[in-house]
Image 1 (tube, rainbow, N blue to C red):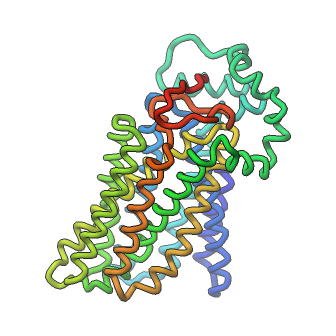
Image 2: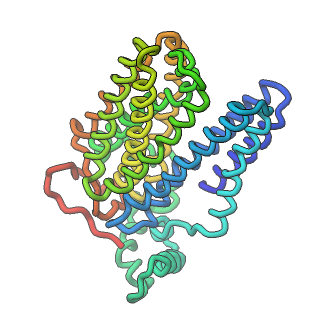
Length: 392
């Protein structure tokens, strides 16, 4: 899935740079979006299943850090091609597609399949080979994992009637598990609320250049570059804190801080001529906290869904985020000439989403083993004292 998404996005991006009509361009961007959807649902899932429990948050945020680098790369590319020169947009689109193509080649060459996925599908020898390879690459020098150990942990799961391979590969069966009694109230629903709120707030990033222009800032491409660079401290903060203070605390703190920064930006936008610095600094701070929140949310989403439906869960949450991303474009377009209203609407949505994990008592999986099937997560919520099932 990850490879298919990367190569679909890359080829669609390259094709878009050669599009001769708006219809062809829209078609290329549509397929590029499909590719990104496949990447989002599988990349963090794979990272979580290849990482040790104790440092899982750190590894996932490092992976997410390259999304940050990509954002900075695009902003810098736009600044060079359009802010300081007058190059064709085709060159911009072509260069923007190249990192995805490189990523696909690197994943194909070096990244293994998830050993959890292999074990749940009865491919014990492959699971052992991958698990031992990953352990050795991390410096582990103890006894190697054996097939008998994998069978002891996963044999009963692959033999259960409801989780036979042919059953588990049914897409509708996985969707039913996502919205079943084991996961709906304490996992699926609150995660979708947060994904909607975060995506709604992130919609401002697409319009940031236009927003700066409407507010009256000078050299908008340079300000957009500063806005993109704010990704870096946000990702660094997430990397440092996600395994120390926990996912829920970090998510709540970052979302509320991002909302407050949008409030400050709205205050500055009410008199932008006198408060340009306030608008720029608060916008950059918002982006930094937003990135921290996305890192925490990515870790939480990948951890709370069981292995058997983790990719599906990530995909569904990503889909909800995409719906929010589409809706917010209409909202932003309607209120782009009223920056104060636009900023306050995004701040309100993010502040509302920040409380969903607390109200719904979502579990914090910091330094805990992942669930394998939905029944393992049944009734396990924050504060109930129930032990998490230990797995390989």
